[in-house]
Amino acid sequence: MKNDLRERRERDGDSQADLAAAVDVTRQSINAIERGRYDPSLELAFKLARQYDCAIEDIFDPDSHD
Amino acid sequence: MTEANRSTKHRIATRRRYKRLMFGCLAVGIVGLLIGSFLDQYLIGVLIYWAGFFGMLGVWQFSSVTLYDERDTAIERKASDYTLSVFAFVLVLGAPGGIMLEEGGVVTLPAAFDGAMWMLVAVYAVFGVVYTVLRNRT
Image 1 (cartoon, rainbow over the protein chains, first blue to last red):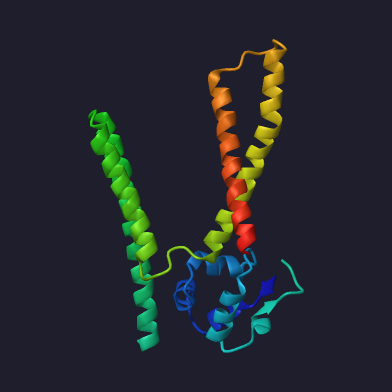
Image 2 (image 1 turned 45 degrees about the vertical axis):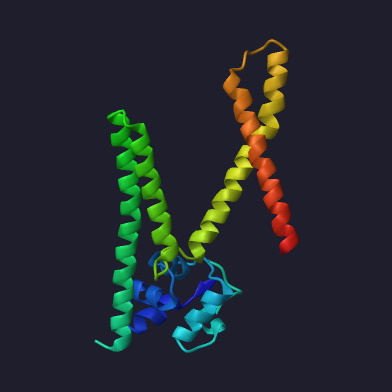
C-alpha cells in the first residue's frame, strides 16, 4: 500500500525518530511504513492521520501497491 | 525548542536508555552463565542468567515507552508461522519415513531421532490446544 508519509514528515521537518515517538512506535516501523514494506494497523493509521491532521486515505492509498 | 519537541526528544532518549538497559540485562546474564560454567560454578551461572533474563523481561514489560510495537508482533507472528510450517514437514515426512527406513533395515536411527520426533509431537499438541482455546475466544 503506497503512502506519502515521508513527504509529510519531511515537510514538517521531523525525523523518523520524532514521528515514531509521537505515535508511540519504533523508528524502524516508521521506516518500514514509508518504504511500503509494512502496512500499519487501523489504530496506528489513525494516529498518523491525527498527527498530520488529515484523513487516513489522504496518507494511504489502498488501491496501489509497491 | 517547543514543549512538543522537548517531549519527543525526551521519549527518544528514554527509549534508547531502556533498550540499552534491556540488552544490558541479557548480556550480563549470558556473560554470567559463561563465566559460571568456566569456573565450574554452574548454579551461580544459571542464577545470574535467569536474573538477567527476567531483568530483560521486566524492562520490556514495565518501561514507560514502546520498545516493541505492532510491527515486531507481526514479524514474530509470521516467523512463528514459517517455523511451525518447516517443522510440520519435518514431522509429517520424517517420522514415518524414519520408522520405515529403520524397519526395512536401511538405516539405524539414533535414540535422539525418537526424542526429536516426540518433542515435535509435543510442540504441535500444545499448539493445537492453544489454537483451539484462542479460536473459541475469538
